Image 1 (cartoon, rainbow, N blue to C red):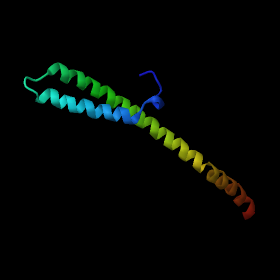
Image 2: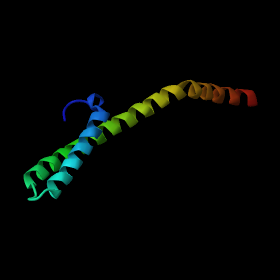
Image 3: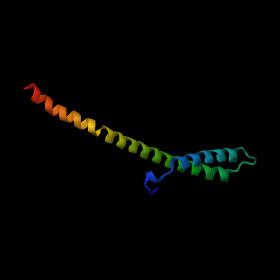
Image 4: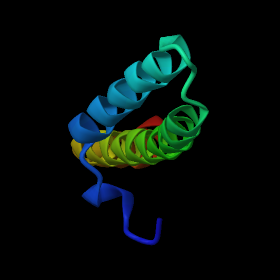
Length: 90
């Protein structure tokens, strides 16, 4: 959990979530029920979901940063025009 979220593979984490979910179902459906396998995959599922949320949050931050960079020239033009307007009105 100490590594930065940019190092998390979203695809692999999603696959691990599905894998753990399927094996939790298997552990519950098999007779006799395998509670140890269920507990292992339930704990893995919770950790993988946390990792997936860290990855998604990091992706959202990256998208916002790139959107801000794309808008920066437009913002500079707007600021320039705002400074020019009061001079033109006088």
